[in-house]
Length: 449
Image (cartoon, rainbow, N blue to C red; front, side, top):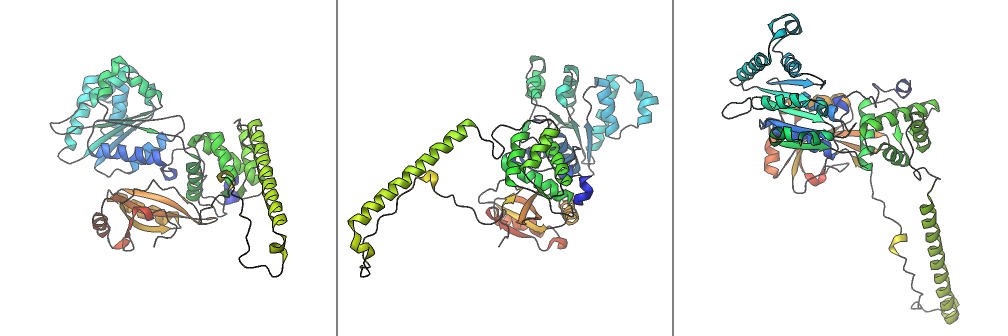
């Protein structure tokens, strides 16, 4: 198995929704923040959608880990339930009743009204304790109309000034079409937040793969070539689940030939083994007719420019033989002007320094608290857990210091002024004395001055 060969602590591309592997792309980060803020504001109804395999369930489990002990949570993964079955599952998840009580107790035969009354009494008991309850239902596109209508009724459980139950329904894109149906109009009007997960861009695919390799923390440095990343993005369409399948098999292929550098040919072989089609023209050496035609035109253009330059130089040489070849030529001798090349064939400037990956977009003029940059997953998990326990807006960023040297940066918040950020820094405690305030524009630098 390649995990043993590369020394991974755990499989880097497992399909299980492990929150530790969540890569916060721009859409994932925005969705997580929107849902979190809506729950903290006690808004009743929230909808999260995304195409198949975009990481909805992983994001839900990540969200659950951010709640403290005053928040009761229920995650429903089976959407094929009747109204009564759903209510029983909710009561069971909240810890109101036990499995034995549901099987043999009075609630086993309780009516819908009795189940709702029990749930309502539980929610009311949380008010004097300043507690809250959050219900998350996954694969909600499969819910029946009756169950969705019951969810609307549950969202009406409230006091005079706040909702007693925050409900997050998560599903594929056709969930939005379902909610737009006439019979669900009342439910649709109660939705306070709608957010959606999108496929990853080419740059995000590279950051996603690198992030997962970092979390798995192998003893051997494993990397993908830029061409391999191009191919992974083209074949997977930027869908995380497909990226996992493809990269998992590519590591198997690379392990067989005992290399830690995953190249184009390994990705092509992996795609063939799991039945994925490689887009035409995406493999090096295989070009489309249009690409070949474009290449020929570019070659002819370059040849014409070269001939024109040679003709100009010859004319100049013939017209100025003494000035060019005489040992006594004056320093002020006229020089033939250099030919001006079209911008399309000028060399491109290569940005200096290694790329920074995994960071949400910076906000100009904002300030963040830089907690530190770490090279061990255990230290990152410890610091992150401590910060999240304080209900602080934590985000992480992977930085490539050198080939094979990836480190993780922990930052807190984006604040409109340095004073607000500094006030947060002072509250972090003595264990984080190294934390400092930096402008948002600097968070992506490899070395922060």
